[in-house]
Length: 284
Image (cartoon, rainbow, N blue to C red; front, side, top):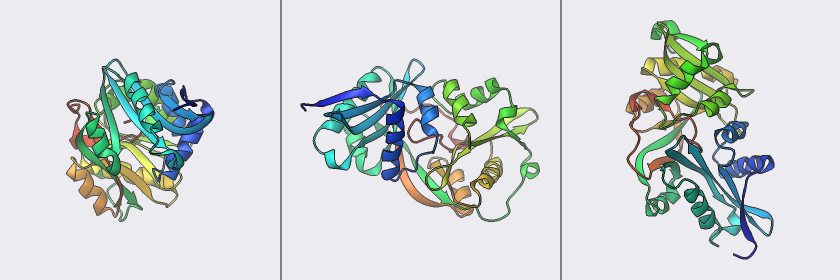
């Protein structure tokens, strides 16, 4: 391991990591890195061999007791040499004492199990151009509004129902970065849905997508999809919400990718029936 060192990621490194993720076929958002840096500025690590970046990982701290692993990548020419596992240990050490989550690609899930992770559900990416006319907001009994018009404290409190720890700073950036659209579904003054669409290398990705009912989820999906300029959209759908899977497949979206949501301890108690699309496979 002579010449190998682990450093924090710079702004240039964050762009590099995005490019690596794109090469892996993960279709990262064009501007995700700016929200990621807000979530935990010190949570992104790069392994360098004689100064050359050869591996990366994110180990993001949320609150006092939760963490999330993502962006675990070793460059193809440097795999099998121990650099990745060195970086993995550094990331896990950074999250020591916390419940840790990750979204594991299929060929790495056995390795994660050896590190103490257990599967909670699968996130299946459903992708395509939504078909049919569908219900509008009136038929679903909600008003669809620009999320930026709502008091941010209410949005953060709503998002908190679906995540194991507070993440207001991350949510603020995630919903407001240029090029994104964030829409909320409101019924009698209550937030009953939230969705964000962002441009990516390939299909626009929608996440999070929260909704009180499948009808509200459909309305949000269709309204958000208008911002993809007629192109495909992709949603990472928890398979423990069968109504979400049925809804999106009924709209013509098809599976293109899968990752297991895994935790080092008991899975957090979340309202899975209202979770139609996770925010990010990289940060939870």
